[in-house]
View 1: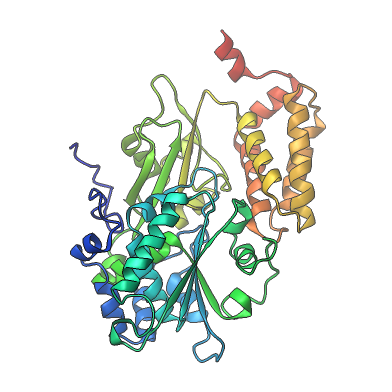
View 2 (view 1 turned 120 degrees about the horizontal axis):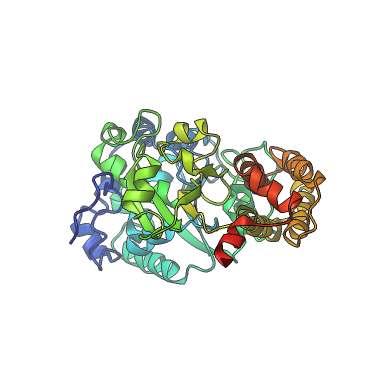
Length: 431
């Protein structure tokens, strides 16, 4: 086996070379559920303190500190509490959670149990993307094994703590990755974002206090409890500690999901770990955190992959999907495809997103058909600015980011299409 790149770390992807890791017997062989035993010997507040000490930040996109989020849930509220696992993963290019749960569903279950204990919840709701058949099967089988072994159900490990699981399958709507739209879907309603406040910590699933965490976030918790918060914080950077799963896709020679220490340069991810673009091609742009994140031009490939460094370059860390686009692609074609995706996936609840996505899509159609006019440059920018920060959720922001960032970094290409009615990329390919 070829030696792995030193930037790759195996914390939550340990033992993934074992084909039976998804089974309880194998998971326990590698210290599975020992973190749960340790957590149950601690107080819920001590568990939260340990997660805070680790510096773990949400791996779903927002990067909010996990321990702080758990601490927001009222401790003495008489109403039932819920821990909700967001395993919807509908962002284009994102596949890290699928890879994680397919290989090690028990790690997620153990993390959910620890999280539920910490926020004093007795119910875990796992929301799974509807297309994930194998992953759902793995979770259901793992839950059956865990229940038979006494890790799920009443009086877990004779600790007095009880916890039940409900697995809910979505129907393929990208909007359900937004936590409040997910809650609406869980409750049997149309999946549309809620206005906030109130926030899920006090008014979440079924109107009860809830913590909503990404599947990767929860899968990291057992390792933190087992080895200690300070141990986990020793990886990564001071403000972005630990590791992260990056799903590297697009124009690279070795696409895949890699667990890498935070703070690793993007250039290392793209050119060394993923093998760089195909022979004869050059990197043109990169989406550092999925299709909803502002693109970075090739000149920014030296950025370090942590929350603060990516933000300093004008983008966001997002969902862990690194999408590489080489110089064989027309910028406007890339933007048009993504705008069409967001137009299709918009739930339609708020006007800026509903109207803005549709309007942008029509403008791109006209430009790509050769009927662009000079005013379209200002029009695209004006529509995107009218959406950014003015929508109920980040879907509209994601659509606007595609337009604004490609306009910013590749304006000459836009001018060529609109003013000269030609595409030099396609012309070069036709020669």
